[in-house]
Length: 530
Image 1 (cartoon, rainbow, N blue to C red):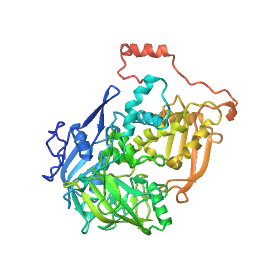
Image 2: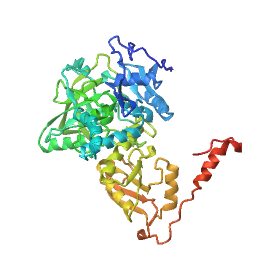
Image 3: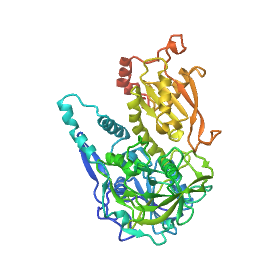
Image 4: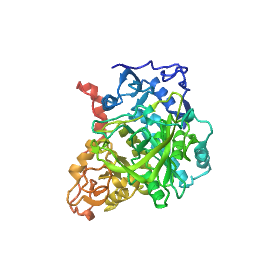
């Protein structure tokens, strides 16, 4: 097996994928100067993002012949856990289509995908957007003038319909087969190959609003795939509404390999009524081009690599699974809807984009960290006392949530726990730990120190029952179980702690400054902690 990193500077006339002379060349990245700093404005498509990563030694071409059955998973798992680059497998045995994986497998790449230097910058942009959409007027004429560019941006980021689209350069309506693409069987116990990095499009039969979610799709045969719409997700709601209305056929489409902002938007926990492609336009700072499918009434990203078109029969369920999931365990065989493929469209030389999940850390962990920064801003709208939050990778997205708050009154930590459990998919959080504002929630050493020292198990533990993740095998009941909140804040007398709360041990600031200034004089061969 050969791993080969190309030179960091690639001629822009060089095709990213050399398997076909018809492959498109890579345009230069689009840049925007914002607030005095240079930021990526938008990646037009998957290929531009891949070229950007390759120029920064963050994408490796694997030239050796590899198998889609298990081998690519094992390679990628090792690379992902080592903090390695995105991988482009140019020769997957039995296929003429290259495969790219681990695109979002670091905090740095995740930030670049969303057009920011750091994920915290994403939070700052979202905060400004939320302030605007909530109609919070700025004070003073100068402040109003400063917001004009942002207001103009919001007005122009909605999806833009086009007639000619790269994703429809090739249209297959006569015996379309998903077996054209190197779909991975990820783990030995999986029920079959799975599409994973998907954008599954469906439409609410009542309101006509679209939903786009990243759901796994098991390949049953060349024309049918499973739609893993968990009960809490938007696609499942559309399916139930269609069934209730007696609508037998429900049009759907699965896009693969769109621009990175649109891919991420399919995973984002957006408030009800917020369109994923509108959110993607906000992230990109420009609209997402969309095109109408050839065989169904669904709009999809025009710059996607591959689109599977079809329908779901609302009376049909089929056993789906097992699947090695982000919990680190296999999810069992369960009935889910079936998509019947009526057409496949793709670029002339398509790239198949995918991901794998399993025991963390893996690529999905970094998608989750982006969501953490996004959801923090939503949380602050309802809970302004929240300072920061951390959804540790070890918790598998939402199983563990740590929040710091500005505590001002008795019972505030419990109020925050209950509010979080009431916010969209945060209802699935199994453990919520609340700490004071001076605690760094990103430092689990600091968090566990507070849990060990500030928590009386009887007084400071809140246990409630309610909905849990459909993938949670620890719950005795499917999709229903118990959750725990830990109040690790300093306690007030009214909270059942009549004794004085002791102050933290802290060195005098002037002594800390003195020691830092003189450290080299001491001759101690260690870097001092900050």
